[in-house]
Image (cartoon, rainbow, N blue to C red; front, side, top):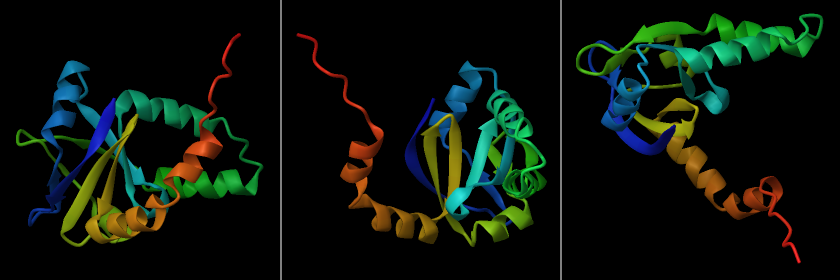
Length: 150
């Protein structure tokens, strides 16, 4: 659903404009509400409400008796904030999430299928440079090619 990479900057009130392509998808799917939370690798995850509910159900079903599950759920859900785009297509990034993502001014917004990720420009460039060379190896490990039928 969400694809691409876009560069933006926070405004003086810590708002960031959501790329027009993504806003078009929101309109097509009647999405009004989003949830933003701590993501992995120090980025922020942004989910449309319907996808957030799927994520919530998946993680809620993890046994709270497992230490890893408790820790992850605490960090993930305590960081969550409900957001709505304003008329200019901006969302507010709460201060604690801005600090978590080490976001100062410039951000890179990427579409990752079912979610949007917001990265500090520096963190994204570091991640991209550090992982681009392993792209083919990752594909070989993760993508199974169907066998030819004779």
